[in-house]
Length: 592
Image 1 (tube, rainbow, N blue to C red):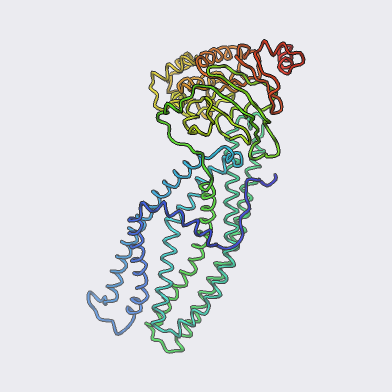
Image 2: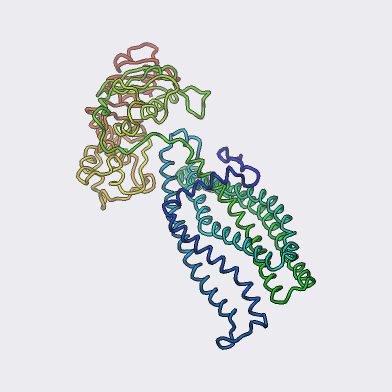
């Protein structure tokens, strides 16, 4: 298998200020919960400072001068230790509860923001991305951030408090011994930078491979019928195995660097402890002072070692943040909720293409349409005909403004399409495609997609007009029947009629039919065509057709070839053109 072009190589190097600034942008989602977060930080500060009292109190506990029995042989230091332990436990509990609450609410807001932004992005974005990759961004990348907000951030603050506070106390105790102990820190910091560089690279590569493996799962499950039909189960298993094995290989390679880093840190810490004890004895520190000093050194060393894990988690979080912010930085379409369309923006149904040229954003070298011009009048039924790749579906995409033309203008009722708000424009059009997509819920939910606030009576009426009510009634649950993933529990004709009912409920001014009957048997085609004929009455209809028998009554037929309009007229006019493309296509179909 070749490398997936959608997987971008992980950037090299350490945490950069630009990456850190990007990560800090996520804290805007914490802002609404800042009081809770601040209180959690306060509890974290208090519990961390309380932890700094342990070495001092333990030193006092073994000091013979403080061996004054207060309560059943326990001295003052012992009582203070018990009090500190209880206080630290209480503060730690509330800190964790507050941090988890803030994290869950923050990540819920972030998930909603990412999804809302994602679904508003233009089609050109989805041409360059795969579904599995995008779903992985919302799931696994945000899960990494959950660990950061809940644990990593708190650990970083706690360990920094211990390191700074501990070093300050050590300096007060003995600056000579502290200077001796701190001599090894530069070596450890240099090692952290070097190892961190490799850890970040491998962590981000693992995330990329996990996203790629999720893409395989997503595509396989969406296309399970093709997988089964082509007996490619083991091919897909091998493809998934390759992705996951690659993620494991990179992860294991990164684990060697993490293991080497941790081993180096541990060796440095224990080596330093031995040296500190030897040096402390040589300069004449008392046993309680030396015990407190060693314990503080252990605390500081443990925190420095813990920073290695914190640093690794921060690397992962920064990688995840960069992926999420890449999505958020994409420019969305200018869409808004449609409640009521103002009279000035209500379409009459007239459409004009003026010198339209177009190529897809991902293929600028391949022109799909060249200087195309035509008019469709209100309530006309206009058919688009031509070989595959002629540009028929592209016209539909341009009408819906899924893409904008490279050159030329598209006019609705004489107005340039950009002057009509995008959501209001699309709200007045409906598409019945060849390959109907149904959501995995009920029949009612799928019909109501054309009008989310529709009543049961309205849905029943739409189903009757679409010739769907007869088969819906045969189901024991009627409108509450589950259609299955992509409508798999319904036949092709039933799915088409559900899609027509959805369009009926929407009551569009402009109707677009994309090969709506091409894959049906004769009886299903008769029912669907009858429903379509009813649906087209009193509205502008654009019909893409390969089966020319279905469009003989069209008011106008536009024949396209290689991105150009080569013929235009009624069926009678076009069939009379000797050597014409429409007549050739017609002869081929009816001769067969």
